[in-house]
Length: 359
Image 1 (tube, rainbow, N blue to C red):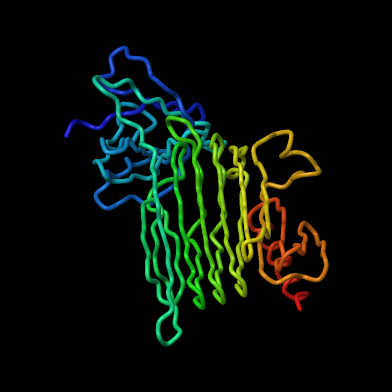
Image 2 (cartoon, rainbow, N blue to C red):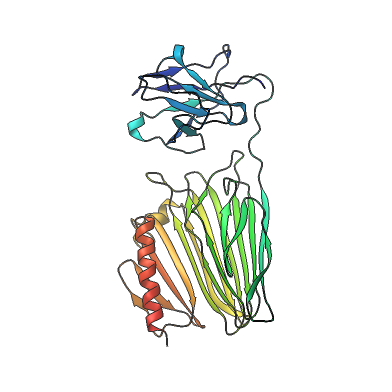
């Protein structure tokens, strides 16, 4: 294996300066901000030199990891596959906490071909239920397709697990759900989804299609989707409900990570009941004229909605949330929040109010 590459780093606040060895007079190709995430040193990782409190570990992918100290003469190399006192994520648009001095990383130009960026991914995952002779719900099909990985976590319950970063720009991801008549399915996720820009640019797409049979029940409550700065994302939901179904479908979107502006997102939700339209909803995030308008999001940093079968008899308006009875047998709860916690609290209040008023 060739020696690990090193990154040129500069931090005025900490006086951290190091240059890539054996780089000659080559000029760096790109410069990106990096985000520091503190970790415990992994077993076998190179130790931090005594007295150096601001040591930074830079991940260079499969080629190795470099530990850069406040002086280039005593920099320590971490073996490939290990982490040091800190790990750096050089994703596009990442920000650096002010306390860390606005550190920047500059990858040196390599001889020969450079490392290839992650290719766009196309994934098609599926969940299908069926009813056994005793009336119990069976998960007849659970087809994972990374980065969408499915895990059975209880009777009729599935958690979505992301086994790769993304969605990234250029990714085309889809989840197909078929809830057989008389069965019950509960779909959740283990963590929020972070949408990132891709190295080659382009739009990312996440499509969820669900068909719910007569007398069946579907609960779909993943954790929020976070729109990182620079992303270009499209979300599509197609929901087909037969008569006598029960559905609880919640969506939450967070406008960027802490302290950053959101990327761009176009969300479309289409729901039908017994072949007729129940809900057609569309909104956009990442347009300055829309995001800051008091008639749209105002100072909110999150938006969410919940579609529930069963019709509330009348509209209800609360602090940052609203309950809207639909023309068909359904109720829409909408909410805004300054952060994900406030958004969830407001959605829960709206959902409780909708249930309380249903006959």
